[in-house]
Length: 250
Image (cartoon, rainbow, N blue to C red):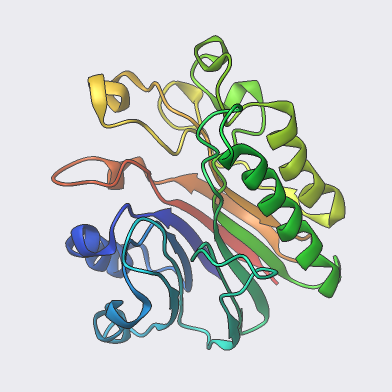
């Protein structure tokens, strides 16, 4: 089974990139984030033509998540403990339970959005109490957290900012401690597994990036390969994130 996660930074802008990528990469399940698309306006027919069922959440502004599945899609939900923003979609996709997440950015440690981010991560951890670590389960998406110092191009550049603070990393570690593994993709350019590069100042070409798009999986979703598709970050009108593609056996 092949699964993938991709922050597309607007499904409308990225659909001409997404559809051929789906055909070429042939994932069975895809988690999308930052679709910036109301649920009713999601391009269901376009992905259905490629064999995917879809569940989407969005308000048409800056959030939005979705799951595409060729393996069926049952018991879909877009609710996280009453949090109103469209930042979570979950469903049973064949034998695998899949959750697509777009964790709040946090803005800065002094901003009101920072404790909100920590509370959101805690609510995501609490949601896991409805499952068992023995079942095939993945949570994947844009976590807006770099789990280790090696997951940013220079941790000194992030002094006093979000994405690398101990509290944010603890929020992700709590998910791991429940029974998930942080799947590390094969290194890309310069032995870095980065998944996000700012559009500005040639950050991608300099490989000044971050690993914030994560795949967290239970042990029964046995990983056989994982890579960051840097090619999808190149070319005309790319997202500022690259997809993470993971092959698993169940």
